[in-house]
Length: 623
Image (cartoon, rainbow, N blue to C red):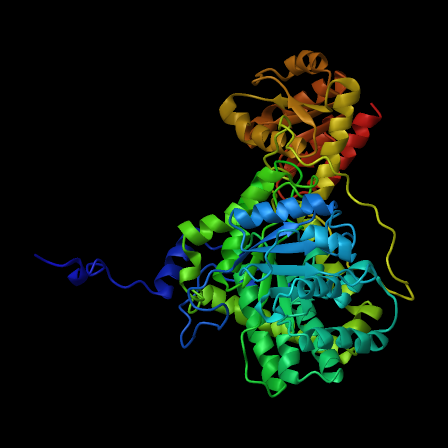
């Protein structure tokens, strides 16, 4: 009997080469340039459709081999008793750590524990066994009390050995100031007391890390992968200098620093970004004369990709982001609950956030292989390209005098703003699709439950003695959501949404494709589509349009039918009182004649959908 180990399943097939693949592709392209298949990232990096295997590569040292990442859960309820109940429940149901968000912090998202007073922390951590093997990530907020000192005192007061507590006190003054757009003083004036706090915690026996190089601020603001990496690297170097100047041994200073990056639904760029960070930090360590050691790198699923509409799709986005960060060696992952953009998540949303990680760890066993992307031509190429782009920007920041000086000069902000503008333009044109928000909307979706807790409105904390442009967070779906909100307001006030009449010409085979496109196009802006199943006689559209109660109309059919009947249809709709007439498809050679017949605008893939929808709302409002 032949063993399956002896079978060569590909023995009858000739080995396929890159050139073989290119020949097949060229045949399909039929003269079109191959570059049509090559993508570009917002850093200008090329993404090829296929890569050769990377040779001479090795896994990047990161999380311990076959070790799971820490399953972190946000604790962000303003009431400390409710926050305590969340923490206990999460730890009893699969979370291996808790992440404490305080109100006013850059990652609080409008919520967070209200203050850092000792009595607040005592209530918050009631029943939490500090040395039970759980991980705690604390995010003190500059200008709102020293949560790190308060928690350290609480732990010591319970006679717990600090060395046995897995506690990350994530002081992140620089990234917080970058998000706010102001600082209480120059960084040079803040370094010594900051280093003194960290040095004191080290002497008391806490393991740390104590300062967080948080790249999320750039990602939240719409920045690119290289910009996020360069920012995180610049923060880490600034903290390293600060701690060394505070008479902390360089090796201990290095160990006091951890990183955090955002993980989004772009699997390959997310994996490449996390791998690139470790390579870049290794280069910094070597320049400092230190033998490289794997840094602690945390991940949080991206805020900017969350949508308020069709929020269940956020579960899929978070799953992909967690998958990518986990495979790329993240030491800890926090999944933002799928309803966080709507309000404070309830128990169900929090459970889904936990289970997103638990399924990937315990059922998919993603942590069992260290750096599975090693040797992958695509991801290795992206990793090294990101390293080069991020390093160049890091050097530019250093030449400006370091990260604080670069913020004062608005150097970082200008670069991020340019990327954000390009990203927003692609969202507006639906070149980047957000399912449920900018494509495939559901006007009849049911509301999801969130806790009855209003977002916090807090006064600015700390003196704003030095001001610069803020790296303000954004969500990609927000412009489309505002149109949907306006539609909901109209529905509530009048009993009907804004409407557009779809003038479907011909048979379903003629109009279905463009009618489907037009329906998705308008409904992403909350404009309901209505219309007949299809008419052969354009003159009949007049009766149907008047009966619809709509003030806008969109002609939908094939190019062939347009050539025969579109002008007549436009004239009929105009005579029936259509305030604005769209045609689904590009203008083409008929544009002049169609506009003369009454067509005002052409809608098509790649056009500025957001501008067209905003105009449609203005037309409806003035109808």
